[in-house]
Amino acid sequence: MLTSLSIRFKSDGYSVGINAAANNAGVSAQLMSRHFFWLLLLAIMSGCAVPDQRPEDPLIERIFRTSDGAELAREDLMRELEQARVVYLGEKHDNFRHHELQLSLIKELVQRGQQPAIGFEIFSLDQTSLLMRYVSSKIPAKGHGESSNIESKLRKALGWNDNDERWRFYGPILQFAREKRLTVFGADLTPAVRRRITEVGTAGLTAVEQRLLHPSGFQNSAYEALMRSALKQAHCGYGDEVYIGRLYSNWVARNDAMAMAIVETLAQGGSEKVVMILGAGHVQNNMGVYERVADKLPDVRQLNLGFREVSESPVPIETYIKALEINGARFAPDHEYLWFSTRASLDGEDPCKAFHRHIKKSKTANPP
Image 1 (cartoon, rainbow, N blue to C red):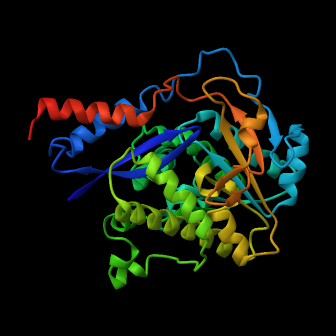
Image 2 (cartoon, helix red, strand yellow):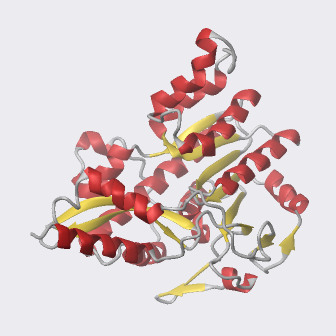
């Protein structure tokens, strides 16, 4: 019997949220407890906020077009961003520099006369009203009494305490949206729905739960093969094909929800552009959310910019943009444009090694 344990793994510049399954026969109940989970997560993610002290990679802070490997000046990139109606700013969630760059580009678009709606993977669809109440409120963000608590109230409503690192990442973008009265929206499924899909699959949801999904009907067998392969690698050897299938269903349902949110925001007519802030994996290879929006809005120009951490050791740009082929299917480079950054963590250890090490320790300390 497989039991779900949710872990966020880091892999080559991306942060991929998965649910790693552990076999009850070989892993003690203590391993599956909430307390142990957080200890394990802390060990795997240790060092996230430590700046990289290695010699700088020559690609850091440079921008490249992946179709031909050409380097672009920031002004060249801005001209491309201006012309697109949907802009994806693919991030590694725990890299603060990525969030700085996102805010910088949004500010510059506004300075150039555009009023983009801003979508967030980090927030769920049902949190959109919380975000809109915050950005549209006429109460001053700073002041005395009621006005001094507006941001604290938003964080509390989101379930984020005052020290939550996520506010450091995403709060400045919301603050700017409030200052400029920009439309904002959450785009992901709720955590509860995502957990249920991982446990029972989309087909196992009740009729009421099914109503919470936003299926696009879009199918891509090559993308499924690619993602199943990626999920198996991230899964660290735990779980079976049925479980991997549920993980893939969860991933697709999330991509569908985000694509729907983008399409509906543009269809409303009040926003000339959407800037979507999401994990880079959701638009990797111009697939996932990207291809679902393209299917619904084939005439809308999209731009896929990925903020990419450099590798552990410097490698040439050709390494990042080389073609990928799986089962005879050829995939586009990770993103149309890459903006390279330092690494958020010095720890280059394979996270699966850390995972297996903690399991081994738990077995020794708590034999079945």
